[in-house]
Image (cartoon, rainbow, N blue to C red):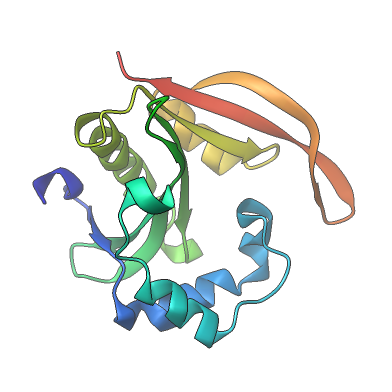
Length: 174
């Protein structure tokens, strides 16, 4: 699909062959704060998840795509979740898995592609992101793509022995 391909990355559906990649990401403790995970996932659980990943976004209210560079290497995941077709909105979460792949423009292009997809193909009115205070890389990424800070949830997330605010960013399709 051309709307999911850019100059640096393309987005594709999950495949059974993504088991090791998704398992590694879901079990990396450094990512648990952004995914609200507290326990590891077994390979069996990830395999079951991948077997059901084909289900329609209107049914399961979420869509996860793999971010690949143009050499077909998996670099991360992008999620559309909390999909509300009646209200025409959804949340977006993005993760670039390896530090070596960050700061290369993959995130910006992916976010641009997924927002275009949401507005054009899903007819959404808005997309939003919840970003934990201190995640300056994500804040910069979303602000650069035109997301506006619209609210702060005080002491929303408890992580590493402290409460952190969560910032709500929103992009409305004009």
